Length: 291
Ligand code: GLN
Image (tube, rainbow, N blue to C red):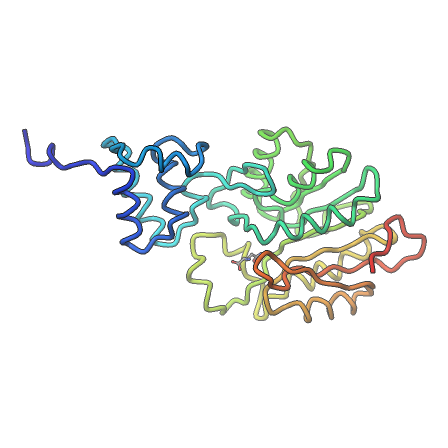
């Protein structure tokens, strides 16, 4: 027997200790290890009840690779291939932004505003993995949800998610509202909004730049959406936008300039003013005005 045949394989507990010693967040290590041992759906309690189990050579090799890729900043979701968003399991990879829990705020808000309407028409601009559109369609089976993206790669990911989850979202290849026709009761978007020179950009280098940055002040795409949206909203319809932690006032001003009324904000889970919405100011609203 060679020396290497005696190299002990780490147990579950030792693998987690190794990750902690290298500075990896505990939750990330747990998710990656569950993935390596083929227990991705089991939940973290599985790790506690199996802490003395040794990894197989194949699992140990994959663990080593995922550990170093995560330490290089690759999102856990790309390494495991999926992400939970609003109760749905989405398949994600480097073709799309890793869906953030912050964005659930936008979904919750849209659901509240659409609550009084039956068969609401909704557009999700820059759908990426399909997260927002699919969550809305799942919560509101009667809604007519249209999801657009300028990236064909993103549309491939999103429509595969829709098919797997059997959610009847319609997909359109478009830059924002350019290729859409008809009117929507709500237009919802998590567009790119980071400044080109933002110091956090290097940490996000695994994600598509196109989904993250938007000009010098990060607001180029929000400006385009705010300008296009009034013509595509029903009377009293809403535009809801996710934006950066310091952009709430600038986005509110853009909406007001575009003629929106009832402009208001929502905080994300971390307490950051993360979303701003405005209502299309035409009379005879189909949607109730929310004060
Ligand atoms: N919230 C993400 C981040 O700051 C960015 C998402 C986006 O640009 N839409 O990492």
